[in-house]
Length: 363
Ligand SMILES: O=P(O)(O)OC[C@H]1O[C@](O)(COP(=O)(O)O)[C@@H](O)[C@@H]1O
Image 1 (cartoon, rainbow, N blue to C red):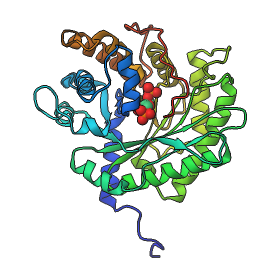
Image 2: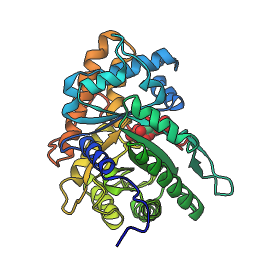
Image 3: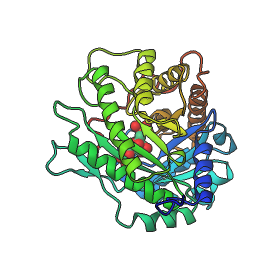
Image 4: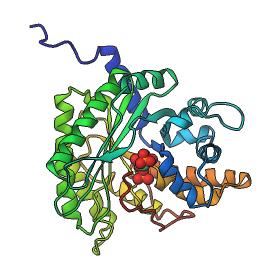
């Protein structure tokens, strides 16, 4: 019998996407998220009282991205912001080349930010589909092999609404399809924000619902599951919930939500850090990777939980760069071990115990 539709992707395209996805989450590796938009960069640089301008953002990225070959031991890929993809390190070599030479796959954030979703309960969708195909084609030529798109959903008395869940799931699927058509592995991020005083049971229930909508839309748009990664928040109690949960509890709630909703064809699920302290994010990831029944790789795509100590040590000073990079690599190593469930003891970092929660982190 002949196929009723033109194939969604040719075989060689599928193989390419599969290969890229696997490289990003190879055993012991995860992703460094360094794709902060300029508004988010303001918050990063403000921590060390640096002005948020193009040159300071370049210096910050120089500190994070030019760590040498050691970086690829635990970091498979790095997500960049548009500006960074075209910036150069102090030695005149583009950042993207530095990453390639050091065995780290460069990726790019392609969404154009969160905007209000009219008619909803003060919720949002994410814009950026216009010209996305052209931008993706260009990014591929310029060295990127994967993309990221972030949607945010809020837990409040009446949210996330059906409208927000269906809209965000659909925009994520459309983005993923366009990305795959352009030979870029999409990292699909339906982030449930940590704000609120709800308990962990509530977060789990909502996470399952949100994921159900996302998987449904991916199926409708024929997105190739083996050639994508999912980026989600761990299932935790709301930031203001008085009852806190242990790493083992967070791990089992998170894993159960994923097991119920995510097909094993998806090669990997990577977690954002969402304002958790560095040591906490690592402990939770490690606990998850000790549990049975994980058909996908469970890894990290942290921004704050990989950058905070390094940023505070660096403080914008050239002479602190080496120590800052060593700290970041130490944390990456701990997370690499956590992807295997092999991290032991407590992670001691410059910013241990310091949460980096940002209220309503949807710009
Ligand atoms: O600046 P944006 O586009 O709002 O993105 C916020 C950040 O959220 C992330 O998706 C996750 O970051 P955290 O690990 O700090 O929660 C990053 O990739 C991104 O830089």
